[in-house]
Length: 254
Image (tube, rainbow, N blue to C red; front, side, top):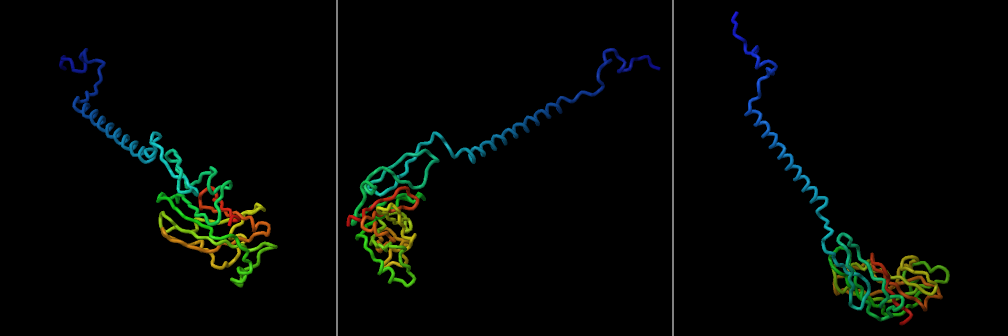
């Protein structure tokens, strides 16, 4: 046998691992690949966060300026405004402040009543002119004769008819008369509507479902079943669809 020491028996090699060292080039290449993968994942995370912000949170900004929307009511040609915060815009509303058309200062027969309100769609303001052209008249016999299916009023009530003229002045077209509802109240303090109880078929009845373009005018009669104590002291209430507050017209003034 050769007396030359084998490599593994040399003193300086004793206790060392026999696993071959990893090549330096291979180790550095793996680190670079992991770094590139981490950068790609971080970029994708930033992109997802940006998209999520735009979709779910980018549409609101507490620092954005407030917007101004018109208030709605019957006026003498003027409108009021109120400031609301962004995102709090509501449908059409009306001022409750006393003024012309209020219980304290109602319109009277033959007055031309100017109604202004937003329609809630953002298309613009609708403007109507309403005029009661005559005083309330008991026309019970004429109403009953108008149609064989008309039923007489309950108890001692009477069918009271009022003539009215309506013009659509301006706004989105066409406009439906369905926006307006006409009620009445007397000393009995019971609000009457044209449909409950109904007068039935009324002579020359106002077409409450008519549609008008700006400048269009329609005339006709509206009718309520009124108790005898209220006939000479009626007040008409004009109600605008989805708008708070009624407009008062003193029908006893004619």
